[in-house]
Image 1 (cartoon, rainbow, N blue to C red):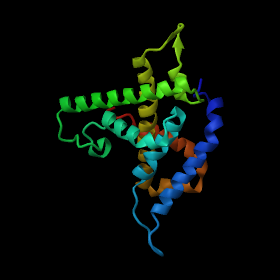
Image 2: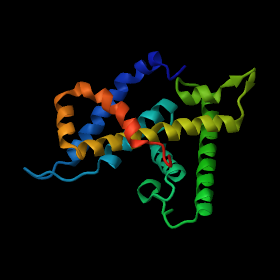
Image 3: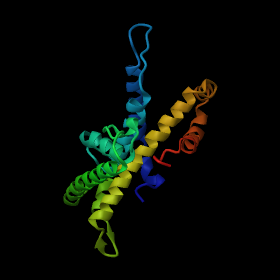
Length: 206
């Protein structure tokens, strides 16, 4: 129920404010001296941090722990892609990569068990509180099931959005005519969001 539109509308203003601040930082990073613009990378400045921050706010992860969440997600989903894994895995065997992924999952589980214990002691209105106190058929859900829900929200919740956002911007950058149309008519943006999901296939390895 937490993710139903009526609940999401309560945080829409905060998410829009964060989006505006993210874009402002991106624009500022591209400003050089008078009359000069610098080349800046959209992915680490916008596509990666923005959805990560939104999902972590929803989940209840403190902002100072977001870099850890990003690193673990990259270890889980990055495979041998140098740009995605950020951990020197390109030259490793599949067996070695599997060990790293297992380690990332264990790290996630340990972190979220600690968060769950905090939320049982001090409930708030975030998703972490819902999962920490979840009951099915009169019994608390198992630690493994709870960790699975946390990991799905934390990792898959932002990784796919980062990939589709980056893919959409790359496609527009490669097609100046389409980019000009979007800048002239913002009503096209919702269609671009939907098309980006299809166009980029944002789930890794699929």
